[in-house]
Image (cartoon, rainbow, N blue to C red; front, top):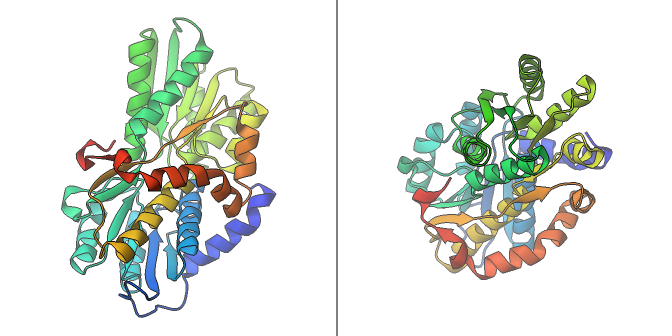
Length: 353
């Protein structure tokens, strides 16, 4: 862990694991304090940490919001379901829900909606039976396309050979769509590239490292090893350095170790889904709906942007990541633009990918 992140991670971990103590009265609506919260899939990985910081920033800026954040220390869907259900007893005015196993949240989310709790799906689109009709997330297929195109820029004309793709949690639409966007782009633009995988690489950093080590050993002549998750990025960089590999490596997200890998040249890029931004937007729109629209959330998919981090902008992103305030200051023009013209970013929920 990078030193500058240690304090905020420690504080965040304590918050998420223990929860805040006061429950509040709930249901305050206009004029009173709102009781709200966010549930995330894994507090140990950067993506969830970013979303929580964004959500907390939005709640802080709105004022008058008692905001709770919960999530298990490792990716554990049933554990998050329990934490989410506990959260519904105190965050009666609204919850932002991010998870990596949508089917098991169908009934708990529907029960919360039936209880009158506004629910915003974050990062993972909701299932049909969940009764959740508003989703804030990326176009993950497009982010996968972006990764493949960045790799192709560096592989030269008509590359020939294997490209291995890894997915931490197969079956999670967000991650599967990234892998599909990547694979489809290679097949379309580089027909002599053979895609191997997607392989399961696991969210847990230790399992992830072992999985990628096995794939690197199994495909010693591969052109590239590309992951779609958080741990994929920094573990591939570590393996590449140890093995003195000449292949391309990259993944997603902006964990400090990942940014160091891009800055040092081990990874050619990382794809940034801009999780802080999504956390901020989802919470800001939830608060707005409860305060100004009698709890009526928009319907559909609010498309949140992402981008590429490479040698040209990695220092800027490292500076952005120093604190929640630095992140907010960096994102503020985008936040103002997107919240000021929400209709232009709305798409049908069925089109989310």
